[in-house]
Length: 333
Ligand code: F6P
Image 1 (tube, rainbow, N blue to C red):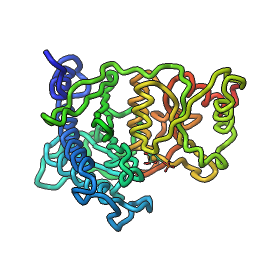
Image 2 (cartoon, rainbow, N blue to C red):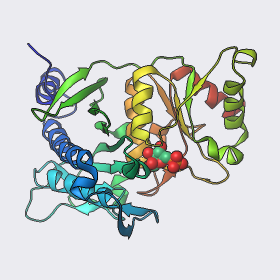
Image 3 (cartoon, helix red, strand yellow):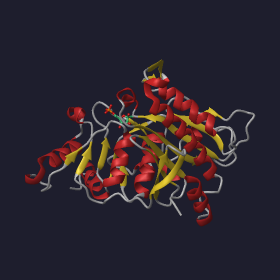
């Protein structure tokens, strides 16, 4: 038998585990279908007229790109009709999206960043989609913002898709991490990575070094020690990478280890990345792969959100490196 399809994997998981409930599989397939459509649009680039600015701003005051808006619509259309969801929330929408009255209501909440790494759209560098699935609180049929404000440890599923040289879907249902590569000829996601594990140690870090003058002392100390290399306190050379698409940077961390950081600093006082649809799903995936994720002091999955578009400092990846950075923040070493 060849590689398992996403569908076969999801059915297999339903047979093996009682959690999450069976209907999660159909929701994940709907999201994956939407991502295939986004992948096609991304792949056509200028030929599909999808590049450039949409001429609007999102709730964070960032200019929306044409593809941000298109991807948001594709995800909504793919997921709203199936009876799996009670509501959706997206980076591109200020308030939660209610499921239209003609469709049945389900028990899950879907949160997403439809197109992560927007600054890379027009320069033909990898971008992606990030998603998180929560349970809608019992008895709620018209979820409001407060119903989405759940700590990341409540997630029942999370995933992301990288639109790179290959389109790859990374998924966790809370039983480890798997990856599927899109076969463009058949339009099928095929299993390409099982029981993915982030190495505990690593000699590679990812940070936007142009923010160095804003960094807080524990971050500056960690990076300085890495840069000092063999003759410094770490006694070995470190490599640096920064793609400026979280999806691509986190995929690399999953593939070969490393630390990805967008920490709080004197400029981004709350952090730069969004908690609910960027940091939280990525942290769930990284922890499921044996890595760790913190805002510097607190495990990201334990943070109680207070707003839908809240930002957070992020340090995630190889466990021993993340622990070291946490210790620096807590003054333990
Ligand atoms: O969504 C935010 C994001 O695009 C991430 O994907 C990426 O890691 C980061 O911003 C890039 O930030 P900067 O523009 O500072 O390099």
